[in-house]
Image (cartoon, rainbow, N blue to C red; front, side):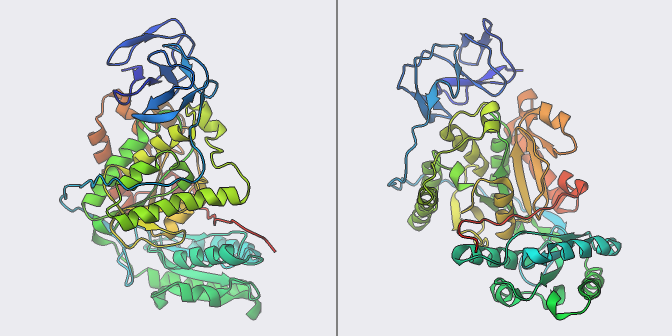
Length: 493
């Protein structure tokens, strides 16, 4: 196995694929280098002398500039490199117009819905309109486990702290996210549970749901009944009995929407897991399916790559607003735009936000950008879509689900156990993590370093996703982890 990898021939640095020791000489493909210091796995080694102030190239692009002279074989990290990024920018469109060859369509066994795409699960969701009824929702979900079986694949409550004491955009976000979840294809039945005096009540959410199947939807305002638990259980029983009629049938993969997310990244994420997801994205979109890339702050530094892949100038303009609006959001709170990467990212070998972004955007593959979505907006156009949402793992993953993703692919180099409202496939960037945290990790992309090709691994991931779409449970589902987080930006009353 290689011990050091230079990602592109332009790169001044290579990434350690295992811990390396000062004094040893290591081959990296085009040459060899003698290490000046110990270098942890996932961290960078200078392949030549780098002068103070010189841009440092990785992935073929600058990831920052050297803050001191760095000798060949030196450890390149936060102690000697700094970001080159600044505030909002003006951009020019230089279309690359990528194209993907169409592929033979495949199918998966899913649940057809009268409105919209098929579900990959047939679950009963209890969705509170406001945090005041969270405990009621959870008590109902616990009691309703007796209905699980047959075509009812699960009963889940999704507590959250919002729905009241909110204003403006925050209130709109809460209403829209809850409305989108009420019509999500993975929910074969939904109980929308209200209190009765909240700002974002049932009467505010239903108009945002659009066309929905009334047979799969019930509401309950708890202030209006004597025994809310008994009333809720009666409605849940109606929904569960209706869901038992559902059966899986062959559905085209073109009906799949898959969210793309990373978290707890390390220096190998942009070499193994994220490029593997990128191959998957190209495979699915070439069959007519859809993928969604989000985490806008983690596009900073790689945004021009995505902009140039926009299918037309109108999408380019939307992408410019996507990026600069998020920068202005940070600046409006007098917060640094580039307060990234996280401590865990740095421990794993990621140095600057450019370093992180260039690795993060590998998940988008090579196909054209076909859609740009506001937070809470559903996918309409097949192909690769960009979604406005922050980098926070649970907030971004919930946003992907609310935009229509039936599955989220989540790459990680450090590991994380959470699950969002839809199956959340954890993809390890390195095999030691996959072996250590078998109860968290679903897919080992570290196999790329031990003999598998990227195309083979991407096809393996496609096969795995189709199996999940057909009912194979993910680790978060086996662990019973299902959470919801809504993006909050403003004032709480």
